[in-house]
Length: 328
Ligand SMILES: [Zn+2]
Image (cartoon, rainbow, N blue to C red; front, side, top):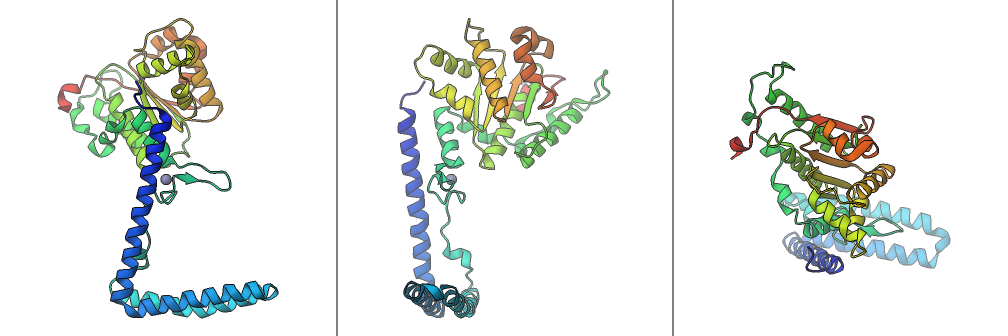
């Protein structure tokens, strides 16, 4: 599956981050020069401000015992100048924001790292890594904004008295709220089940796109890909993909139940996966064509109870008629 190694992909991403940072700061620098030239008063004032601050720093080093007083004094002096500088900017049609670098990711300021004192990769790096390793770039195109309720029938179902459209509308609202409130959601896991062509994968993709948009790293894969990674781990070939499934912020498994049941692999690794993610409080979102009874039969009680546990999982049953033709 992987042609180039994970380390190589990560190296590429970090190189890109470095370029993004340089570009953002280079542009901001050009903008600063441009503004200093067009608004000389601003240029003079900011020169004076930095001289005052540098002088204060020098004095603090010389007289550390008077540090508090010196910096208070300097702050008072520059406060008024800063106000004048801002007014000069505004008069020329600029704001302070025009001077700041426009980073692609404000969270890490395009360094690729967050956290003090312990650095870890920023979510923008993790997301880029997952997108490239798992070929999931396409999921960003299926969004709540593109979610069409009009393809679902308004005719009420006999049993529930509700139409497919009403049900889908309430699910859409539920899932939009899930994304909006994430990670402060009541039930962190979602289980979407029901026949084919009822919009489950589309809904999962909308959620994934929404979370990615919020900067939450999402790993989305089909159960078949999931099984391939489990097999590689089981054979001792490569356990990095399975590790990523265990550790990623949000795991999305589509089409659970279509993967083969391999001896000593499928059930064992799926149990480990669900159990460890549950223990570490990490959300897992699943879509499956199987009914609750079929899930229980296929995966047996200990896995089924982890998939369907009502205290942590919101189950959304999809019913009605196939809409795939209408979606085109
Ligand atoms: Zn970042």
